[in-house]
Length: 216
Ligand code: G3P
Image (cartoon, rainbow, N blue to C red):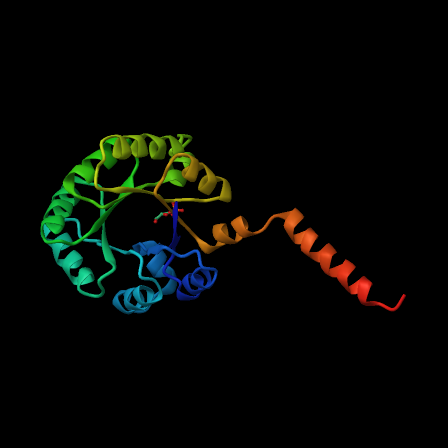
């Protein structure tokens, strides 16, 4: 399973790149608002940190507006993927961007049917939001599982990107559900690195090594 960073924070993305685990990046207006500045500049910088897909999200509600924003983002760097929300207008924008050779990530997917429609319209990435479904007492991972079965079963030309990942357990569950990609914030990536027994084991080995150096 590929791991994307779900952030627009350059330093967080650099950290994942240094760890050798960065396969791509997803941003959205909320994540961009946390860093500020120029969205274009932030996107260009992120695209320089990874050759993997970097999602840039449109905010227009109408098809022509989505197309304008999508074309603009796609011209910023070759690895930009235009993030388009699931809607009637979004499906049309996805289909038209696909016809122009621009890759899209259909976002705000909350059901397997929505993901199926996005794949048929031509989205290359399908983003079910796991955490937000869990928040309303639904089973977010079930949508990932269903969508993966549909995409893989029919050999659709799309990848399921588990989004709204809130915990390391979500990452394991997404991998077991067959998600092609999970996008995670740095905090979750850090939680994945650490285990109390690993951390105490490192400390014990260091302590024992130092004790062995002392004169007997
Ligand atoms: O990429 C967007 C998605 O991951 C949002 O996550 O935590 O705001 O539901 P969250």
